[in-house]
Image (cartoon, rainbow, N blue to C red; front, side):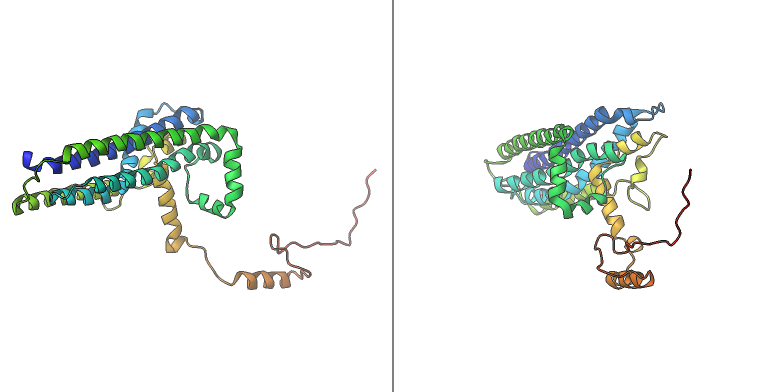
Length: 293
């Protein structure tokens, strides 16, 4: 055990960062339930089931975040190449990636309240109106609480991750290098591959032919609880990938300008073309309705 001390400490540190991410995502889900529970159909379904399924989907998302630093840090530890610089890089990775994931969870609360569905790829359509979108978000007083929630949980995660890194530095730094014999290194590398494979399985989310899908969260007749368990970032990425599939791509049967020109010609529309309403026309009827008494 002593010979593998640094390797075990490094693995435990990565698991701690992973768990911190899961805890923060569960708090975001709790905030969503508290803020929007009135939208529930009150079918008598267990709320706890929605949170358990939510933890399942959150773990899939966090496995995407953890797989690279897990493999990198444990491979370095296998050869006794742990360092404060590597630990800082891993901590920064978690901080940046989790800040993005947390942003989706925070934004999902007002988004769900307005659309009654989790955040999806439709938000990318607003990127062309960044100024207008930013004004809508910052100008709505009710959104301030979610912005503050995001800032507080992200800051708390960064603080806890920094403390965990310092502890890992203290426990793995100094002293004589531990044994790096071929058999020990091979055993550590095998353990690294096994743990990385477990993380990849976490990304897949389930056994069977297909990986985890949004439909796995549905368990009752209450649409609010069914959607409560879906991780917003998972739903966002899944919907974006679905849009990129060949069968879901927009059909381009003709050039847009040529199609508009031909449509205007067939409708006998003359004059300048309105870029917003290209087919707008004025129809003057010859019939005058009779006046009523």
